[in-house]
Length: 325
Image (cartoon, rainbow, N blue to C red; front, side):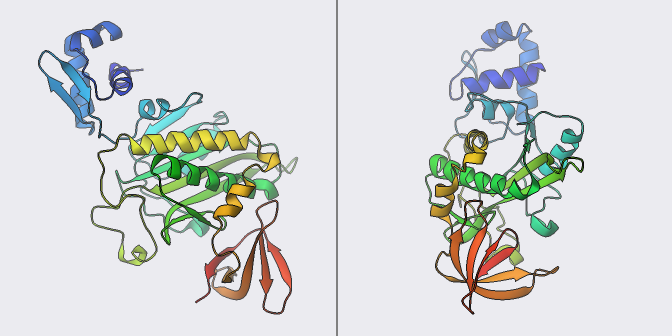
């Protein structure tokens, strides 16, 4: 770990408090000149650090830059955490690590994605410094049919984290979207690799994208009526994105450890949108074939229960839905 990384860890642990350059140098076994160079490098990366003569250095309370130390501050137990300023896609990045043998629980977080995507490879708008994009590597010992449980548990984890850290109510649009005030604020994409020999999952990468702050110039025109953000204006509250990442990760890993017991199910059903309402089921290779139905709820595996206009009931394990106009 570099002096810069160690220095940031010290500043993060003492966020809002001044620490003298001399004390930092003693802790890091380096010169005060090396401390100054590391401070300068952190500032160039965007960290808001105050420097006052005879007082030292202080990481400002309102700074909201993603960092490994910032996330670990809110986690009691964690495995490998990788924080990137930008990447093509956290899912792509983590899939490469999975193929190289990365351990279960590895977390990749980024402040920007240049090629983020969702279901059906649809582009996921991932501008810099406003969102939280993260992926978790899993090596579950179950079949591909059970992968929907991972997505469902992830959705509950995101909802609980948002409600705890920011204090706003969330809803789940089956199976993988999080809504706030009628607009999509987060999406979950679970990608799995199957072991052909035993029919079980070799590994799974669960990606989560959250619009934390409203982009400075707003959302693109084609998304303006659909997408929303958790916070419309920047806040002086401390470390929101790091806290969210840690809370989501901690919540999910706890639920994942009890996945066969489906302990997330009641929370998922409580937040499920459009229960009892008329919906349209979208199917076909282009996702444009529409079938009207009434949404009844979900079964124990989070498959969607619906009733068609002819009175027949069905259970859907995949597909997309929208509200009937």
